[in-house]
Image (cartoon, rainbow, N blue to C red; front, side):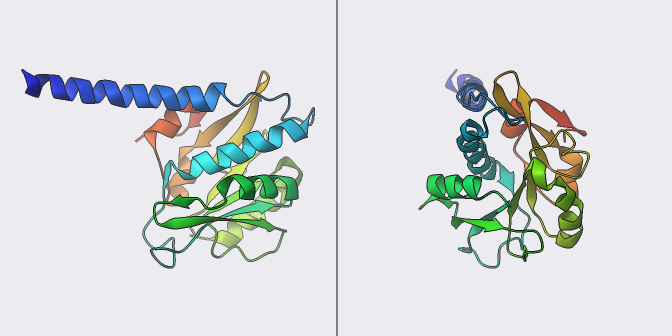
Length: 195
C-alpha cells in the first residue's frame, strides 16, 4: 500500500512545487511599466527575474573555469539594473558558484560571462554580441518586442500591469543551455519544441 502511495505523493509534491513557483513568478512581480511608463518600478522586478532565471538553467560542462568559479551576470548599459541585481545577489551562491554582477558596455570582453541582459535601448548591439560569443554558453535575456527574433533565449514582455517573459528553446539549444521544465511552465510563451 505504501509503495503505491509514495509515487503519487511525490508527483503531487512536484506539482505543488511547480505551482508555487508559478505563483511567485507570475503574481508577486506586479509593476506599472516595462515600456517606459515607469522604468523605476520595473528595475527591481527585472533584477529579481534575472536572479531567479539563474536557478533554472543547466550550463554545459566547461562553462565555468573551475568548480568554484563565479556565475557572472553581465548587464549591458544599465547601471541601475546592475546595481539592483548586485544588491539582491550579494553573498549568494548558485551551487558552488558565487554570483557576480558586472555592468558592461558594448565592446567589453564577455568571455567569462554566463548570463547577459540587453535592454531595449541596446538591441542594436545584440547581434554583434551574440556573434562575438560564438559557441560560449550564455543565457541571453532581452527586453524588446523583437528579442527572441534577434536571438535571445529569454525576453521580457508586458502583460497588463505585469512583467512576464517568453522563451526560445531554439536559442537555448544553440547556446548549449538546458532550461528547467519548471521555468518553461511559467513562461508566457515558449517558442520551439519542448523536449
